[in-house]
Length: 186
Image 1 (cartoon, rainbow, N blue to C red):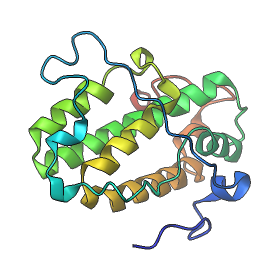
Image 2: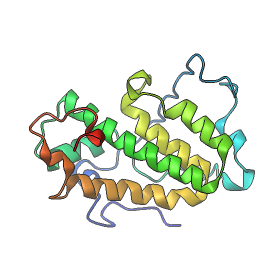
Image 3: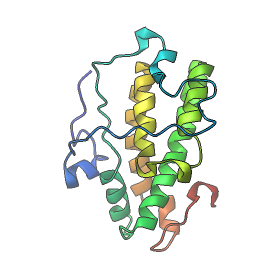
């Protein structure tokens, strides 16, 4: 599969504006008390997946979301680049990504991986050590989970960016400060 190039479609504005960053590997979240009861925190997550589904030579080609994706979405919506707005947007994208990830895992019917996913990445965002990177950690987890999920991850990022920057964007309902829990508000 050919890697995505910036400008493959009109939704990669954040890459056009800021260029593709040289991602440093995100720091792994530290295990929390009570979350690793079913699995050892030191055991690799990939031990729960079929060896044929893992491709350790294939690096993630989905761009990292933090910070360029969020900056671009806010700029396109005319919102200031404040900490509140960035965190509210991260929380919103994280909720959508967690929902989609749970659907993919359920569709593949892999309850052991689903449990690991919930323990490591589905807790409250404010309890996550590197909350600004959690959506990227979710993408990393799902990327390593199954090769069949990778096209969906690519589409998710592009479709989310398009939806958040469209004239019908839910973000336009709010003033200059985005509220937390946007997905709950109507």
